[in-house]
Image (cartoon, rainbow, N blue to C red; front, top):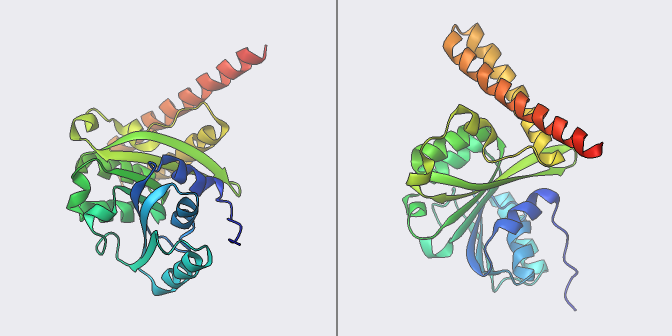
Length: 240
């Protein structure tokens, strides 16, 4: 009798929802390999590489792969980013729970991510605005973003693809909000958090004698505040 499958949290469930059916998946920074194991047990991926740069987490991944009987689909592999993953093993690439700047470096040094119909599913723990900026420079378009709340924290998940023509015209506000609307409670919490990030950066720019940058960031913060205010007004009207 097979072992009952665990439930993914809201954060990884959102990542799983963006993985294309029957794809070849690479999960970078896999830790316990929860995502590839869950997808494999559900029959949703053709193959998966559970990659991690640290031997300890990789050993935990191997135990879970064996425990849930998905060794024929999921392979645990020691890899710094995607360095030890072959292009044909990664039609969809998930990076969840890593810093945004680290994700940007992994993407920059993996040229084959720009080939074919690949998708990146990115859930940065920090520096989402810097990640969006780096994606734009490298020609990756953000196709969709959604937010999830888990244990009191809100997380943003981005679906991206290499598509340079779609990267033009992104302004400073986009780097801080991406494609996150103010339509859901999770999205609104994320947008409020970004105003806090901006407040800190504005203060830093002023202290370091960069008034023009502080002014530009203040304008972005005001735009996000106005977006949240408009949504509050709309929701209030609907309740009347």
